[in-house]
Image (cartoon, rainbow, N blue to C red; front, side):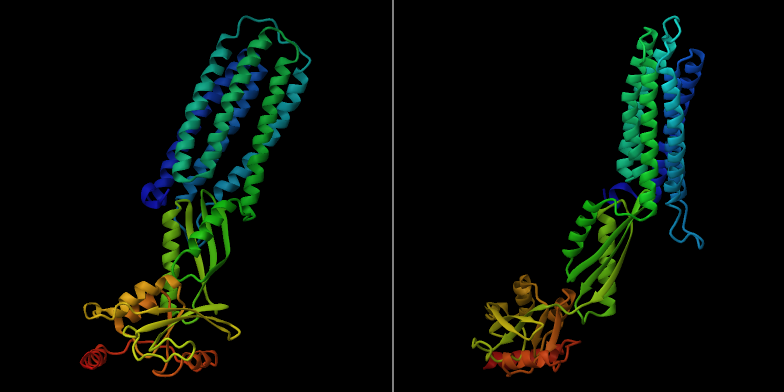
Length: 436
């Protein structure tokens, strides 16, 4: 789900709050009905199920409470918002659930060897249990759809529990009928089953918040997807230390990216902004992305040089990037070793192609994933086009051999070209070339 599809976070949180409070009221009424009916008809099974539903009420209320706090604006005291309030409340409810589960477990054990008293058919308990099945189903659907839409882990977890309540209600219904038939062990066994489900719910509500509060990585698959997407962004030479932590219904991402060593602060900031906006737009559950940009020198560089002829490393540098008859593509490693990868013939030198010829050349060679261009002169459009693709440009003297250019580069003797040469100079040169 993208942010455009789901609206902004404030709207999503408000929708989640409405669903959570509606589910809280519905399940609360159902829990009260179960408890009153169980008390009036002396049905320990229904009373235990009422405890189970009561804990569901607390869990759903915790979701509402967390979503409500998450929708509040950041403050000087809480600069990261109050998203984790939901996590903390869920942890407390988990502790209460474990306590209630053990209480019901002991009660179920006491009932295990006792027969239910001989009474009239329990029509109302059966009716309440039947209603519970349908209510659990509709609440589960509502929470699942909304939780998935707004990326609320709490609502989705509550939906799973509500679906589980359908099975629990069926067991309760069967237990009430079998207990009425005065079958030994039934009432106690059903109470024990419900108690174990309550304990399971409590343990889950304790364990997951503990992992969240300790900033554990809970979604490695999403983390790997984000790392892959970052690596594919133009200008990113490498990505490392991708970290993701859960905070309430949202996630926060941090990462380090590597880019070219001569990239300006402005371009690095622009790249970081582009990356952050892309991730937040693609993944609605991402609240924020923090990117640290580090300039690095790669082990292997892809280099292109405009040359006058094809003569290996003795080829001479041409005086202008776009109007060179050939281009030489090299691989340079950090040890100073050079490998000729290819020669590219400038197919755009014909008269009809002479307008913006360098731009056409760049479009044709950009697939080589270039890092550096060595050239004597370069026009304005081509210059900015290379810079926009995070390609460094170094000044190579016209007429010297490629071998000499590479040697000077490794010795630090080449100056970066920071501005294109004037268009007027380019036009004069082109006119002279055309008249010859």
